[in-house]
Length: 75
Image 1 (cartoon, rainbow, N blue to C red):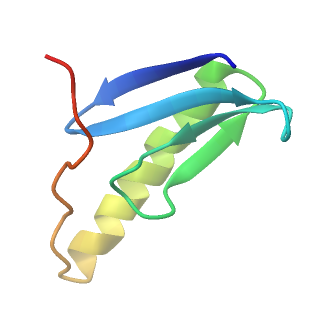
Image 2 (tube, rainbow, N blue to C red):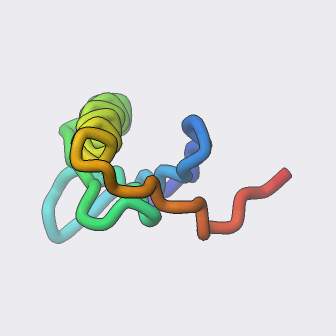
């Protein structure tokens, strides 16, 4: 399995190849249901960044508190 962790803003993005889906998957563990996929790692990362921005935008519009980062982030 190929994988990587990307630190974007304050939320960790998990990026990995899925043999089952035959695609790259990008997931933001701290934002429930915030994930995306793509034919390349770069495409999956770009798509999840859009999803993350929209997730946070909608949470702010609805007056919901933004989740705290719970995923350990290497220093």
